[in-house]
Length: 549
Image (spheres, rainbow, N blue to C red):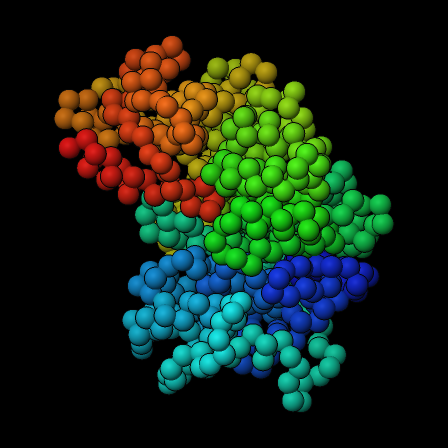
């Protein structure tokens, strides 16, 4: 069995060189061009001392160059390190201190943050020796930054072009399963940590995600995998990841699309403009859309419906990971045409834990089923997924990351060994249903203990979202001198909704027990979710404390 994405992509390029691999306003690559560019970059990086185990940090939004550089790293068995390109200099310096990369890939627009980070990292192992700059659209030509001793600066175009003395037929790279990938977590509940994945383990765990949606069995070997990818009767796959490649969902979706000989369509604008994205979907014939829940889906649906004007969409599947779609949103998506909707419960640390799929509006409400290798564990770490009514935490026991970089204590806590088997649990509580489905109750770390009673935020959030005026909701605990913790909620309303806090409390009265009702409920124009649907809870809690004081 092949054990590295780079080997599969190379063989697809050999068999189907003229097929589109990457399409973007910033540049298009056929599979032949994609492989040749990555090989040229890999050759150049190798000449500059980048090799197996070298770390290359990506401080860059979605571009075609991102994927070329990523592919080059896989060829070399260098380690790509994903870092949020929105960080400022101090934040970037902190993560570079952890990752200790030899090279840093940056967008032209990120020069200021990178220069600040380099100043902070002077004389440390966290300062990269090589800076690779990718030009932003409209960025003026000029110096990429001031000269620094020990730091080499180069533009992407210089790496991708064959240099003097370099072979026009780049050497054949043979990367193996032990190559690694680091992805920094979002850090919404603390300092971001780098999750260490072995490429071979990641490829193994992604097999069902690659081949299941296209109705193919998992291939037995490389030739079979390439055969599937170049089949003439395989429906075209054109994937648009709206989340940044710095997040696992978007990056893995792009990698899996390329494993099927599909095309990754890139929105080159790091900001989300619904109208532009709607036009891109239709002009590029996007078939698979990766999006994070209602926060992004709702404005995009408004724009798509206006763009289509009643015509059917090119979309055949819409996938959300990190935040679920509401059933009302799913009805609107299904109205676009024959579109399968997939909600995936997964995390950078592992999974998938559960999946909910609908192919038409009549399938709603959507329900989650456990994924293969997922289990439900009670407080005694006993498996209870076959016991209707049981409550426990989701866990996954398939192929998993190595752990967190430089953090064995947190790694051991996140990946406990239970009955001799390594598990990963995000801490999400579920209730096992009579019919084999599961109901989500909320994350264990967010369970509110109010006067000795446990309140699962997910249950209250679901009840709030049943109100037609509620666009988004989050429930959490706040300190309370009498009860220890009190239930609080922040709610974002639909535009022009005429609803008060009292109306929402009355709505909850018939849906949840009295002790589960929020003692504090505030209305917001938006909950300011990030591109993957995550919230900055600490900031939100602080703002609510200010509101109620």
